[in-house]
Image (tube, rainbow over all chains, first blue to last red; front, side):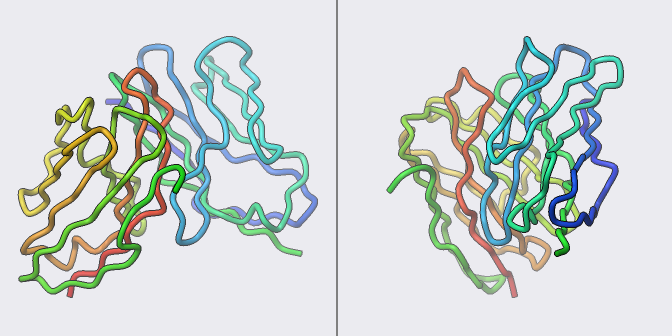
Length: 112
Length: 112
């Protein structure tokens, strides 16, 4: 069955430090992959998506992600984290039709 | 209003009450979704509507009854809920031909 694993439940980084959030997926075909962010009390906002082509995709708010087929991974990165990036981050894979399967999320804490 | 809106934002109900959640999208989309987000669990897809027709019911108990009168509006009718149904209920929309979903802010439901 299709699944998405985000191994880190919580991550804490210092403001200005670099960030990498891990995501591994299990899906037989070429995946469509997404990263969403959720601030407290809010819905999910799309950060970036990968459908095909260049395996390094750029998103909003200075985020990027790299698709690595050999590792079944789609890790999210940001070179310098801001306090406003503190939120919960979800990786998702699109399966048949327009159905998304989400990971359990990673809560990012930013310390000043 | 822009994007995806949900009302009410917060709802407290007893187990014998009947209430409804409302979702409206202003994006010209033709697919709409209900998700349940519980603490410490991945986002769970509940229902999918494409062109007002229900195309997915993810084994949701019958005490949750969706309604999609047109492509812009989606309701979730609730009756005889259980305390374990307390959660954040998120609505999303997309083009039926697209995997990119846009989320509303959610309704925080508490069942007493």
